Length: 250
Image 1 (cartoon, one colour):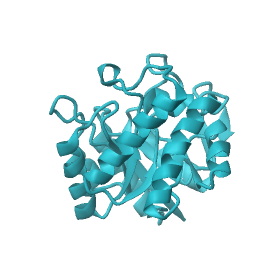
Image 2 (cartoon, one colour):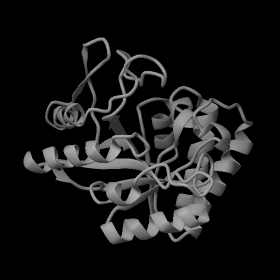
Image 3 (cartoon, helix red, strand yellow):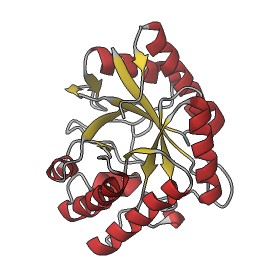
Image 4 (cartoon, rainbow, N blue to C red):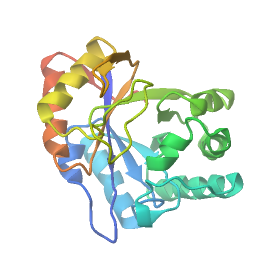
């Protein structure tokens, strides 16, 4: 058994980190690095790239709506051309910081928007496809199933499904919006058990108690959750003890 363990990192705001990146990099296999849209700056990107090399962690870009004031968590409605340009600039910024970029995962509100907004999905995918062409290799897009998966496939880009260990699921397979009951999970034992079930059984329990099928090659933890390090260590220990290889698929 094999699975990827990813985390959103490098999310520096006004020079201050929002997570214990050093501890998180030590247990994950892929890092979604903020590249300026919602957080991050050239210094934090270079630092994340250096940490990734030190811990042998794959680097993915984590572009967002250009909305640092709201940490990229509010839905925005830019023109498709403007969104494509913004995402492309963020990807280029991370490459300029020295990243050997392996994949792209949209952040926050953009992550959810591309599941059902074809225009924004195309804008993101076009930016990824353009960079892929310049790099000479197809960069996978990481996310939840939806419109973006089809758009990526049409552009010749792999789409990799992920599951969330620290977020509540709806019966429809989406995430419970932040601020609603059950949206966040912060118990290390609970997330470790969820990780094992996802790998072994391919399902996850929703906030209503129903189990739904989830076929995920990558498992995500948010680095800015207060108990993120404890949860990440618990997940990694549970996977290691179960003989599950934690390995980046990129």
